[in-house]
Length: 147
Length: 213
Image (cartoon, rainbow over all chains, first blue to last red; front, top):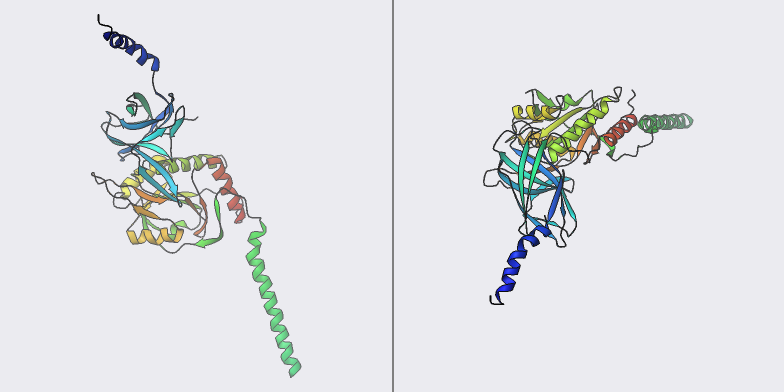
């Protein structure tokens, strides 16, 4: 065996170990989706994300098989006006958190493909700038969880 | 003659002073109560609403006289609003729950006025408001009629650009307006609405306006 092959083989062997030891980049808690009032086809989704890595990460996209489209939005009050704007991505500071919550960042989940009521569970897939993905099972609720 | 004239003047002056005293007593007797410290923005002077002509979610006229004889909370928004409006309406439902624990306190009627009449018809408004609380009343109307009420209350709204599907967001004032029994705007509650805090403020404001229970 030529010595130049060794690092390649070694790295191939070590790759699964490295990937395993790196673990997930982000964890999520307080995940929930607000049940829509009857006749309304847009729901809001919320969660608390924590960056477990030493680097800031971007949450680049969220998808769900249960909705025609999912966007990230931010509500804010400016000059007493309730406003809302789409956000292309959201930055998680290294070892820091970002909360999607009422009156702030939230997911706009549009045109559900099935009727969703409190107690149902929706799959959300989050994609981050380091290429990692996080799949969440988000419960549909009428009221926010207490925390 | 001269004496009589000055007597008349003196009499008039005394009358004027008495009238002034009476007027100030009438004006200030309500303010014997010190102004309460509230998280809500209490207007310095109650502001009478003009006449307006909207429809409620039962198809009945919703006018200034609908607001007479009881306290009211008015919130302005639109049903396609995914975050702010459900959050505020759910909070107002919690306020009603908190008020249920104080049954002697006069209960306000809660109105959700849609500033998006293009998408929000009365039928949709009825199911929408009823979802949050069966007692909540939806209302809306034509642009001009909406404008008459919103402008008087300092409520602003603006339509966003429609996306590819024709969906659009509506920027709208975040506060909840408190209107008294005489149809006057007296205070604004700003989000986030904490149920306990809101009820404490509501109770203090009613007391300040001479309500007893």
